[in-house]
Length: 110
Length: 115
Image (tube, rainbow over the protein chains, first blue to last red):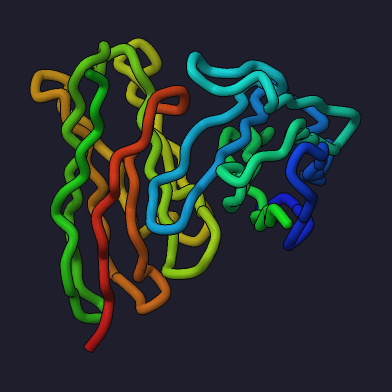
């Protein structure tokens, strides 16, 4: 199972919106609702930001939203803030009853 | 408070074995699938494997990179999951996390495979 494909980096200015893509196949993203997104600051453990494509856990800002179309999932951060600067990973359940993570995206706030 | 605390990491020689523990509290451990995820220094997240609940026959599944070398088990009476690692390779060097998919992650435990 190959890792899901994410852009290596995405940047934006404070207040802007950015979108991170996560491309898989019909054996993972395209065939499941179990797509999640994680935020990881340097030296910290990952934090769940989105689960089941578009659901936010309690305590996660509504500036974070998720969606999916065919084999690609997306994470949108609106009203970009300095604290959003971090690495972001997508993950998906697969038809082989395994999980797969994305390659990771570094978000830079200009 | 929900907690997952990993332990048992350390330095091991290539070809050696190590057993990690994952102590859970603050949620219904016996009703939760537990996954292991690892992250090499400066690298991305890699899913290692998962064990389901008793109701699902404690079914396990593994990433291709560790299948046949790693074994996940659990003791619901102790609210603890385990990752038995054998035939370790240098590329297994990473921080290992145990997670319940929707709950906060712990800090992980570092495994270093080196001679």
